Amino acid sequence: MKLFKSLLLGSAAGLIAVSGASAADLGVKKPAPVEYVKVCSAHGAGFFYIPGSDVCMQISGRVRAEYQAATTWTRADDASSFRAHGRINVDTRQTTAFGLLRTYVRMEQYADTGRYHGLAGAQGFTTEGSILNKAFIQFYTGTAGFFTAGRAVSFFDAYALDGPNWGRTISSDRDNVNLFAYTFTFGGGLSASISVENNLQRNVTNAGSITYAGQRMPDLVGNLRVDQAWGSAQLSGAVHQMNLMNRTPTGDYVDTAYGWAVQGGLKVNLPMIAAGDALWLQAAYSQGALDYAGVSRYTNDALFGRVRGTINNADGYIDALGNTKKASSWSVTAAFVHNFTPSIQMALFGAYGAVDYPSSSAWDYKAYNIGGRINWIPVRNFTIGTELTYNVIDPNGTGNAVAGVAAKGKYDSLNLRIRFQREF
Image 1 (tube, one colour):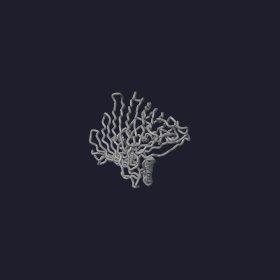
Image 2 (cartoon, rainbow, N blue to C red; image 1 turned 90 degrees about the horizontal axis):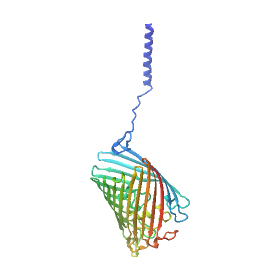
Image 3 (cartoon, rainbow, N blue to C red; image 1 turned 90 degrees about the vertical axis):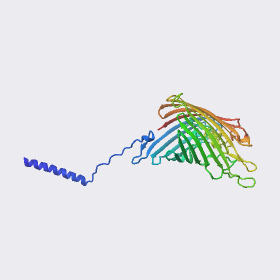
Image 4 (cartoon, rainbow, N blue to C red; image 1 turned 135 degrees about the vertical axis):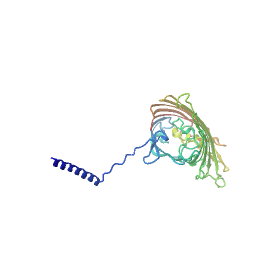
């Protein structure tokens, strides 16, 4: 019996030894520990560390479905229009020995019909296109300030950053300009920025006035801004080079001229009325740089259907002696947002502007609009709403007669939008 137990124990030990050796021979190793995604709370909600790095990332976006009903001008005009819109944002941030290093990319895709598309008629044209809305780098140099390089919001704009209107209103809102800028930070929410920005996006011309040559000098833009708990205020200025192809009566190219623009904007938070309430006020003036006042871009918007693009807009014209005459433009904008409850919100807004050509009133005109919207927010970051606007172009002379449309003292349009929007 003792012999049998000894043999049995010896056999078991041998099997264990053989099993261990076989496992080693097969190269079986202990699995590497799983690397989980970690939350990066230092940069705000939604950021996480990219595995294997010290870079934090946030992915966000939105989906929007919208319908528009509007006044028609001709039988070919669209009274009914649809839009589907998708957006993805990628925001990365890294703390370096110098300060924060940030990159931001926003890609958008549109599927548009009718007035969202532009001058489409009853045929119901549809367009789909991918748009690089924003792509910029921000590099913070300690407490002194930061660089911004790439495609970003123009440093001239203020109201356009967070104004409550859905459709276009009369104000500068070039939210995707190629630029290089530096922002000085002084503490207490006070900052100043200097920016060189793409000149071509600000050129305003038509075949009967001036023709721009190649870009020689970018637009120079600067602002002084304060952001505090009560709200924000900004004073902006811009210089726009008018490098033209037009010639004088002697055949020489006209002299290079320079347009300019100034703007003041104010946003006041009104939590004493309700959480999230705010008031916006803004005014702008320009000479030889119509786009900065926003009136010319407003009249060229698809909300006007067949009237769009038929108003004569140009930064100026050349007189009989070959001198450049710069057009002037001004605009004022106001808006108010009120939250009745956390889930019911309303907004009212309006704007007025004019374009004047020196010694030539045939192209002069005024434009204005007023509108409002109401939103229901049944779930956080999900909005169902409607907006109604009344839009007017009031031309002074026959030079702004609209081809194919019966002449009127003013061209007005009612536009109704219905929107479903989910942000994430």
